[in-house]
Length: 336
Length: 105
Image (cartoon, rainbow over all chains, first blue to last red; front, side, top):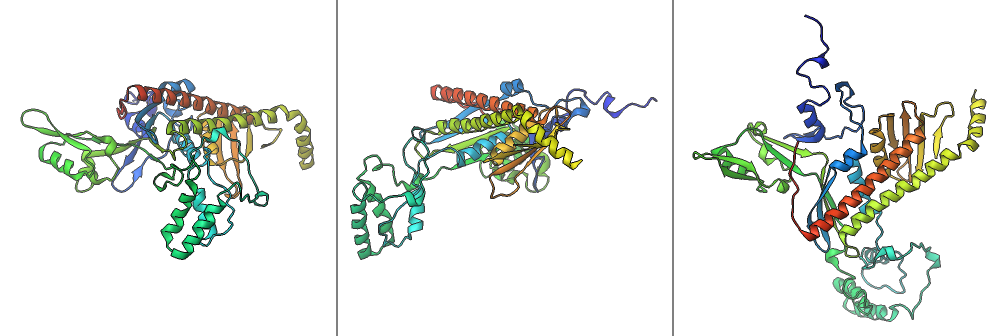
């Protein structure tokens, strides 16, 4: 019998990945002890030995990338980004948290603070209050503390002193705090939305979706047991005729990956709990200044401008190479 | 800023000032999928400094060219993400239907 390379055997598909490797590439396996296959295979030559090109093609990305909005209201958006790598999805999330501009109080000058809240805590709390103003209409300006000037006539000085005297009489904590919202009611823009403790944060949560596959048909009593096992009601029972019933995955979005369904004897062989690696459920909660869909667009623009900025830097480095080559030559000669 | 040698332009380290994991990891992702790249990785020398070093080694092409292509790929991807997202938002405002979670292996 002639010797045949393992990769040239009939049952080894050339040019496409075997199903189990394809599954490992696209899914995170959530077993009862720990998730496996969690990393993304990014290297272009990862499957070169199987004749599969793992390199990135822009047109493939353009073809496969999808966005589906699940929920959109005034302050919240929930959408699915499908066909994007975790690196990019996470970049958008990081930018949304840290780099999309929002208006906030940065410097606070205290004339007199006799409340129970220390100056620095109060200043920090003020800084957390979202201000309903479009940051794109402003230019960023940084002011050093010694440049700050107290303007008693143009500020709310009178009101603040009024409050502080009333607080020193009562000495109650909530009054001290609320007194500051009262001082802002005289400003028409902030009278409604300024100190709103309910929505004074920008929360961004990102989850990979849970996907449940039933490995065998779970029927009758087992089906009922499975429906009961899941605390978030992912499964349903359907009739398959002849008095038989079968469990189905009815609400995969509700799955929190609690792994309750694969706990216990042999359930791991009946239910396969996996996540799709390139499918992200993105939730953006706006602080109110900008609608959430604009926030995401702004975040993508931030990443774009970073790229643009660095391409120009790399490009100038390339074109200036003639100048620096001599310097590099000198260093190389010295080393030699 | 590029740190490399003139004898061999195929491997270089690039220092990006005022950047962090956000850009570096995205660039690493774009670079890794380029068939010309044999190795790439990034590090943040000190968490208190806003500086990342991206190492690029290629099969022969100048590392700076490959990096530039990767960054430009990333930019095109961003534009596409933005366009698709805007379209999806407009669609959802019009119809408001949910088609997600139709997952194929």
